[in-house]
Length: 300
Image (tube, rainbow, N blue to C red; front, side, top):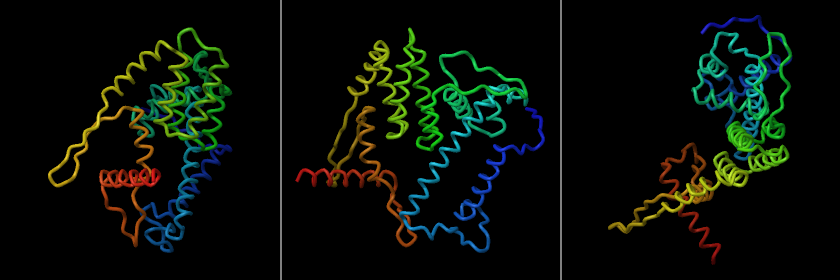
């Protein structure tokens, strides 16, 4: 793949990216994440100076910033795709350029382009116009409310992918839908995305499609009924007094179990530099015990 190298760009977008890159470099240095943190900083960086509360808060702040950066990435990819920039550079398409230049996994590149288009373009509208070099880009349409929460860092790229895919499927339902219904569907998914993880959001999106397309809903309901009908849980007594647990849970029950068990199965905070050495299975077993103890206390 050949690529024409343009002169360095010094516009406001490039300047902002440069400022961000400098701030990230400094953050890498202070956190000790890189191999060379400097003589004035220890191997653990400055993270030791944060209290446990500050450590969690900084982690949350960084995640929000990461989500905002992902929103910008989607806007850049959408503009490059609408302009045909990757094709000008010798790539087959935008996803191909992402794979070649950024070494993205093919599936990741494809989802990024699809989500970028979904966020900024009307999925039920005409194909995106590919602007000529120097021509002003196409103003975004797409899902403005979803773009807003993504740009604010309130949802992740994975949330945006799930929501865009669901809204595109809704827009392509047989017979079409009133634009007001699509807007209400977007508002519903945006609200749920700020409260649930992407997996739960996908489940909610499926139920939304059930409501809007009863025929498809019946087919999916049968699939869910089959998944629920085949779930089972077996407890077998062992000679040493323990219990062997085997089983299979349906999507809804499995998601509920993970939601309650997950917070109780997290690694314990390090004590005097010693991290939690329990395996995932051990932590989940301990978490189940804590969950049962809390339930027993609530019933007392």
